[in-house]
Image 1 (cartoon, rainbow, N blue to C red):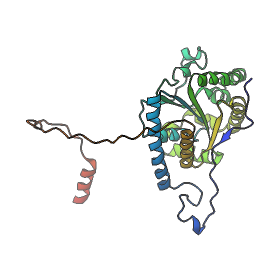
Image 2 (tube, rainbow, N blue to C red; image 1 turned 90 degrees about the horizontal axis):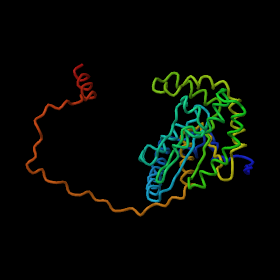
Image 3 (cartoon, one colour; image 1 turned 45 degrees about the vertical axis):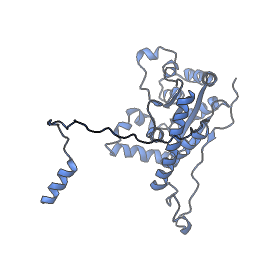
Image 4 (tube, rainbow, N blue to C red; image 1 turned 135 degrees about the vertical axis):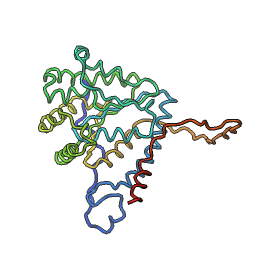
Length: 299
């Protein structure tokens, strides 16, 4: 039997900020303790530079990195993944978010549909929910029996050990959000047309089962928080701080080395010679802002 940790590893929780204190006037935090946007963007810029260095190291070294993101609905998994991947190459950082299994996949070995997406040399694969669906949503919503869920929890540590022994760097993150903040975010999705796609019928069904998910999470940690593949938990009521903490953490836990920067100089552009722009009726996309400005000026 694999050795279990007594508790999961918790990423830094936001420290309390004293309200209305003059000394906090110039801090990067708001009075409620949340990070200000300007401070967030500055820190994220520096981390994006490091992620590009990580990308180059992974390509050159042939490293294989697999990062799992699990957590409650509305905990910020998608936003965290976007913050990680928005300035790097999708050919190196590959995001996997699998839909519900097909009838054929339901007949396969459970983890089979996930294994085909594991990283090859020179790749970083990020799972937006992973094989731990069986320990979470499938168990809570009754898509699998308790017996199948327990069998999965018994087998997962050994399977992950095989992954790691094959050379994969495996990092597992759980994002935890408070009941109040989860309610606020899900209600925001209902009233924001840009976010309606994030609110599935499954989210609505699972919303009322907070403590069933808590029990499933606790059982998952107890069974699969191992010395070779521990769980790392980030409190995400402040999404910006959670994202920065997670990116810093994963950079610290991947032994990448920055390559020596090369001096880059743009070459001279060739002369036009006898080339002339063609007299062709290009279909130009209208400048809506210019049209709107002109219309406003007339009135």
